[in-house]
Image 1 (cartoon, rainbow, N blue to C red):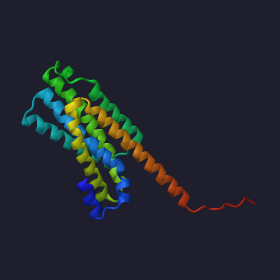
Image 2 (image 1 turned 60 degrees about the horizontal axis):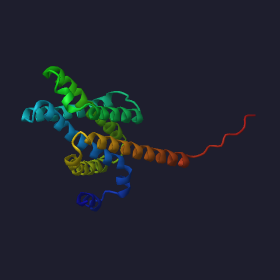
Image 3 (image 1 turned 90 degrees about the vertical axis):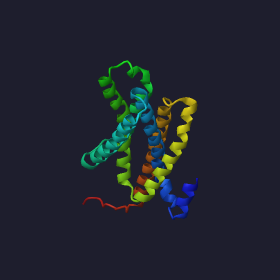
Image 4 (image 1 turned 45 degrees about the vertical axis):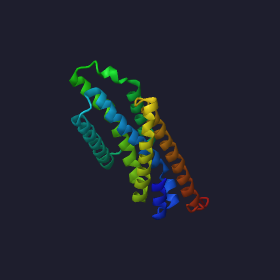
Amino acid sequence: ITSALAMWFAGVRRRAMRSNLDLFFMGAAFLLLETKSIVQFSLWFGTTWAVNAMVFAGILLSVLGAIEVVRRFRIPKPLHLYGLLVLSVAATWAIPANALLELAAGPRLVVAIVLTFSPIFLANLVFAQRFKETSHSAEAFGVNLLGAMVGGILEYSALAVGYRSLAILVAVLYGIAYLVWARDSAATSSISESSSPRVEVGAPV
């Protein structure tokens, strides 16, 4: 609340904050996704500095890879990306952690990388595509960071429901982000259509 008030007193327009509300929910969801990734790898390979370093390196590489993909290639529509993202998050929930412990170290690492970093990569594709469209990047990023702070608070819910259940919360938050984005896009399109000049075309002679 203090940070939100600080942004308001610093001159961030409330309209800009409302127009970037989907980025707020993305920030909260991504923080939870990062936390879940670290916990998963710790369960599969031990809680060591090497495991934590590997996870953070994987997250940063996923972010960089998503940015380059958005910059260089034409990617699917947001609806398809959100759908793939929710499916990948659902897979991390559906597959229990102890299922991978039965695998040898090599195959376990491969499956763990796919399960852990697929949602992170897709989440960054969604974010990079959305962030590219914003006209006020500083305000949009500020709203996203506010969401990440809320995600840090929501992280403590894992003490009651378990870290595996964070996947459900992540999926819900990304679902809300999509609905907010779809609503704002529809509103923007209707405003653009209503404000565009109407050209009267005469009947052919």
